[in-house]
Image: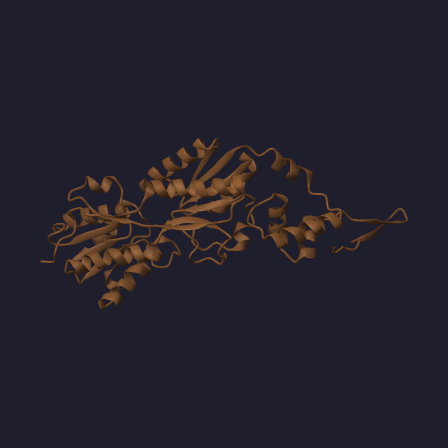
Length: 357
């Protein structure tokens, strides 16, 4: 067994003493991060057995004593699961939240929810909730796609990204869990559907093309679909709103139409944005789908009851929520490994797409 020498000798009252080992000392001895040592101390599942044995051996041989308050924190954790919801008014989340709550409560846990603004840091919020509410695990509903190991060092409990993945981050496979759809491919499918109806001038309604989030993924799907179909990319047909709400979409499309942009179809990355776009087209004297076809992604119930009903690629919202909760509970209760799942979408035909005239 590897042993570790006495560290940090000091002089006090004429005799040699040893400074108490810290978690940073253990991390240095084992050539791992402080967060990895913390995960071992908290018996987290996302640590390899080799690393776990090495850290535990170092703790034993160096007589390291974990901070009492930290150990008490672990012992007194409740049966609470945290849910951090990014974006306080997104109707897409309603069915997902309901499914998460149902799954969590049926398993005997309590759901603690915190809503944050789109500009807030969901990981920092989750870390605060973890400490204050003694959480066993966290679900992030909506979030950034660019996490790094340093970002997640704040967390000491398992977590799942619901409705998004870590596409632009540096986490290795097996370091995080997610449940989402294939955003790029779904966007390509939407553009192909418009192409199938004869459309060649297809506009895209997005939030931003470079936000490292759902907007960028679906924008990249739009661009790659044009290339696949042999259609030229025209930057004038990309309409950026800076957000996902109906009003921003209405204003952005109205401005683009006022500028004289010509397109026979529009792909919106979200149902809510499509609804704003359809009203902008109507107010500009254009009929949907006679003058302009519209297709989107999400499958909101509301979009079935507008006129005309929206053609959209529906996300399996209840399954997104249920599987996110099940994966998290499996890690909490059975120390299962991280898992990433991609769920299929289904095309719901409305009356907002027609053959180009």
